[in-house]
Amino acid sequence: MPPERDEPRVAADKFDDDHYPAYTMGRAAEMLGTTPGFLRSLDEAKLIEPQRSQGGHRRYSRHQLRIAARVRELVDQGTGLDAACRIVTLEDQLQQARELNEKLSPPPEQEYPPLRGV
Image (cartoon, rainbow, N blue to C red; front, side):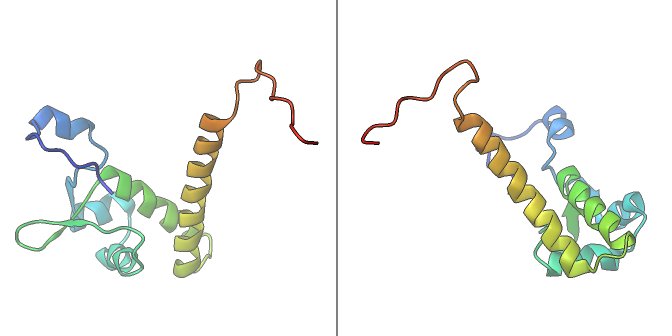
């Protein structure tokens, strides 16, 4: 989910924002070397939920395109679409867990506190 902002964004901010919906479905499909139907299937699978323009057209961010590219890579290797979506979801969850574990782990030079009551 893209971060929420209260202040208006200037054009320069949009270039650096991985979550800014800058790409139309046609452009996104072209960049990924796939069809718009493939992108719609990822939306239906709830893997990526593109934002909509005022006219109702799907708009994709760079972050979403990286996810779609990873799914396409797995599908091209023979993995079914549902399985590829699940794999990408689990990879993302694993990465988040690793980051949290690293953040909560004591630094290497710090010893663990003694166990009490053992």
